[in-house]
Image 1: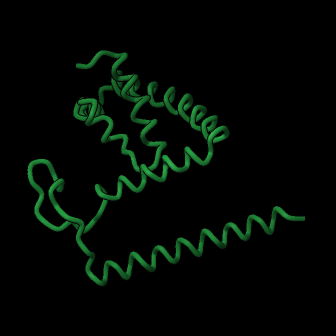
Image 2 (image 1 turned 180 degrees about the vertical axis):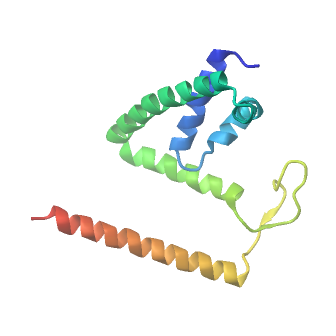
Length: 147
């Protein structure tokens, strides 16, 4: 069993990853070697471990959100560029149409495949609808903000 301070730290790091786009909290737990112990604690209803993880998550959320806010206030363009890089970098892992079969390491050797026409149509329609909603909400917000 991991030490209490390790579980609290894992909760803090995992929630930091969850705040950032393109990074998975579960992936951070896998990197730390704590994914299985935490998920087992949840399934075994180990309240102590889950509470320690939760305390770490609350602390990490409070501290990291303040840090991220200050970074955005000071270096907005650079922070946005880094966040865009994280999102772009995660596309390789999240790509839903890999070509090739997974090996023991996953789809690491697979190429990015093209989607079937029906999937592509759904994705394009969803992107257009999402963009229209975003533009509409932006216009509505600026209209209500102006006197």
